[in-house]
Each structure stands twice: as structure tokens, then as C-alpha cells.
Image 1 (cartoon, rainbow, N blue to C red):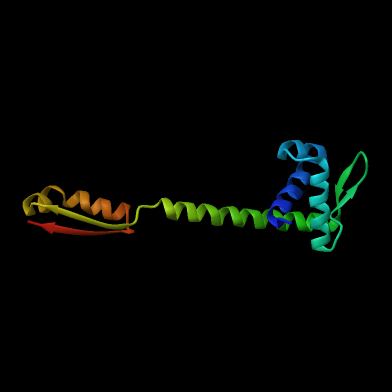
Image 2: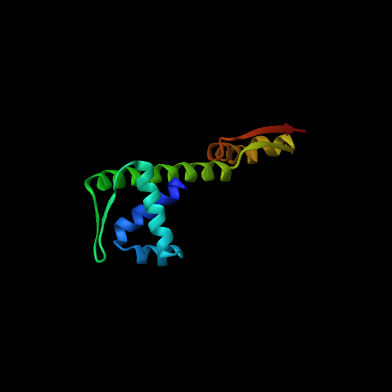
Length: 128
């Protein structure tokens, strides 16, 4: 069982209140959604939902678990976002070779700003 996937299904089920609605949204069968929730309840060791043919309601333990699931999935998403930002951030070494007069007078303010904007880039200038 994919626990995070089951948690996502559980959250959507609590929001939509319908196995059918969650199944349609996830493009899965209603029985697949039901099986995932049953596996999640077995894993947790507690009944999370009261089910009837017309009504779906969280148990008291289901409400507690829902709150934790939302927190866990939010943390997972933040961790993923953090990694994506780090990977997109420019980093590495940049070597620049230019005439000394140009580097000291014209480009010095630009280099200063560049280093402020991209602290993970190691700059090295070679003046001729």
C-alpha cells in the first residue's frame, strides 16, 4: 500500500464525502478507493469512517488522523518544493577574464550585485 497515496485519498474522501466522487476525480474505480481506505484503516488499526449507503462520516479517531494526514502531506510537499528550489538555484563556479580597467571601473557594481543575487556561485576574476 502506498501510504501517502492512501492518505491523499482519505483526505479527499473527507472533503468530498463520497467514494464515487473521489473515484471519478482520481480516475480509479470506487472499489479501488474503498480497498485503499480499508488498507489504511487496517494499517492504522482503527476505523476512520462510518459508512452507510447514503452517508459517510469520520469517526473521532478519523478526525484526529485526518488532521495529522494533512500536516504530514503538507510537510512532504514543502520538502519537495524546497528541493526543487535548491536544484533550480544557480550554483557552481564562474570564471571571468577581462581587461583590468574594464573590470575595476565598469563592471565592479554589476559583479557585486551578481554575487548578492547568487551567493551559491563561486566567482573568480582574472584581470589581464
